[in-house]
Length: 239
Image (spheres, rainbow, N blue to C red):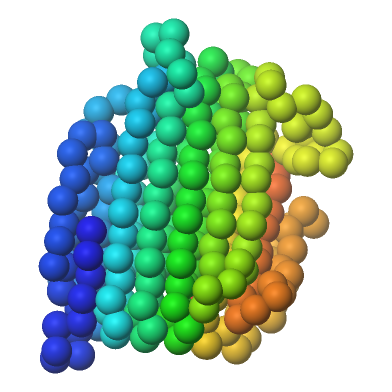
């Protein structure tokens, strides 16, 4: 996917291409100078053995918002290596990317790895949201690893790895999720962060922290995804 400035103060999608299960659909007319794209699940999964990738490029002056139609459900599938989804995104100077998908649900028995690499040039803006639900209702979480690196102006801004499930000993303990079954993170980066997170997020298990660079991290843990959304959704609406 490639978003470019259209020369008239708006944004156009120069490339919009995908295949099942990652289908991309432009949704609705442009909102001001921003275009919106939704990820549509074209098949079940990810399943064990799946190797998926998504590449996003936001050019100078372009503004792109990316959502998903529904939650992503990582499933066990056949005996095979871990499924993997690699998301690579670049944001040029003056560009803006908002990544706001629905949560990922790590179903019991799944084995899934999510790799995120985002590079934002100086003068670019980013809002990056990731939510995780540890298992469907009434079940334990499968194995899931999130490996995230966001850089700004060529320097690491946010580097984080989270592992849950049977192989991640102690993941449900106080040092990781404190018994919570849902967790969300929101990273904002760029030159226009004034006031972001000035009002603390709702709930006792949520926090906003400055990053070593032009960035802010908001995170929340809760017994279910509704608690996490109550804490982080208002911050997204302010951006």
